[in-house]
Amino acid sequence: MLRYALILSTLIGAILLVVPQVRSQDEVFNHAFQQCPGDFALCAASTCTPLPGVEIAVNTAGGGTRNFPAAECTCPIFPGPGLADVNGGNMKGNCEPPSDNGVWSLYLLTGHIPQEINNWNKGEKKSAAPIQLCSSGDFANCFSFACTRAGKVKGNVEVATCICPINESLEGAAAGPPFATPAGQCNQDICSQSSQNPPVGAPFPFDIQPGECLSFD
Image (cartoon, rainbow, N blue to C red; front, side, top):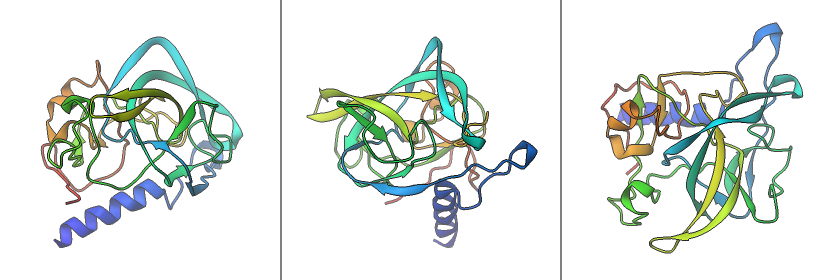
């Protein structure tokens, strides 16, 4: 129980990025975390499809952008509020939707998310989204990126199509494994198949081993 609490504290701290990472030339990313009202896409447990030859511009320290290889992710839409970094991703400093038919991909700390791998089933077991660690492979970071509403899928689940960078650190810098992901329901195959279908994740530090699961139930 104590270990669970410590890991949960690490997760929350990593998501909020309380201590910004110092980059070259003493640049520090100016995070601006806030709760955004309204619908948002929750991509945490999604797997994505790389878009060959397509790049996405990501906000970086100093106010510029950097291009990363892009992936397309289908993510369920949740009612707000959701946690955003309005200076991160490709947000523009506020919570205004990215387009008339758009929503942002934000974050909510939850252990249950409908997933395409289980036909968007909302049941407790099929929607479980425990966190696992991948020691190798690629991931897509969808936090604070623009999405477009894409209608409803099986189970009357409304989804959005999100374009997300591959192997990006949440601060506009390149990152690699290990990475944490709630995708795949702790099946390590999600890691070995990540070059073809990168799961949504982030390079957070965790005191868990590949194959272990961190559940929020």
